[in-house]
Amino acid sequence: MDIAFNGAITMLIIGLCSIMSSNPGLVTYGSSDELVESSVAEVEAHNRILEPSASVLCHECPTEGSVLGRRVRYCRICKGYIKGFDHHCPAFGNCIGQNNHVLFMVLLVGFLSTEASYVVCSSQFAAKSQIVDRTRLETSLSGNLAISTMLFSIFQLLWQAVFMTWHIYCICFNIRTDEWINWEKYPEFQDVVHSQQGQSFNEMRFKNPYDKGILQNVKEFLGF
Image (tube, rainbow, N blue to C red; front, top):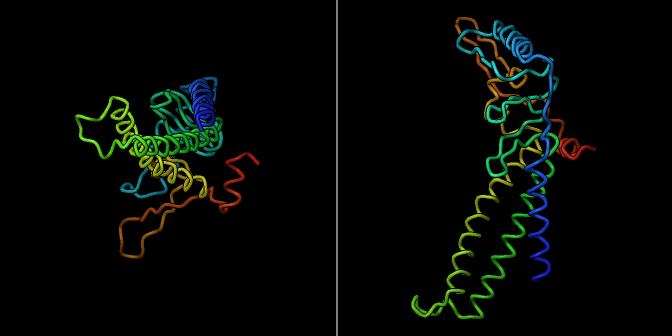
């Protein structure tokens, strides 16, 4: 068990170094002014179709048909355009995009399995040492350390499990976190329902043009 646990920690450290230094899918271009002007012009042309109340402003994000290509989004923190941009991860200090999204999911699985293993090991240690039955004054330093780190690992497991579930959902339905939160910025996710006679506004609904079914979406994520 010690060998497996230490091996998992070593692999996590290697994975962390890899994702922190990896290229998430940075898209380079010739002229930033030219790019921004073209993307704004495209979105404003789309907005003229809608009513003013349903207009969409996306001055920092190119559309699907823009110069940079398909599903390229702008990260304000990295100040760059990322292909397949999901989110900027402050823990890793890097964007999660097309080139490192799979590695990000592998690291999530690694963190969950390692923390779950640690909770099991620390609970077994506490049970064998009868730490739970002792008073606070009788508990040793190693016992306090085992209990505190076990509780911290349980907390980590809870929010990371929710985080993992969300990303699995996004993979299955082929949508990025940024696209889900900011779908009103991207014209391809907008389904405009024209108002009926007598109404002065149009209704804008969410649609996902990239959803090809769960199996095909997972294959696309894995690069098959």
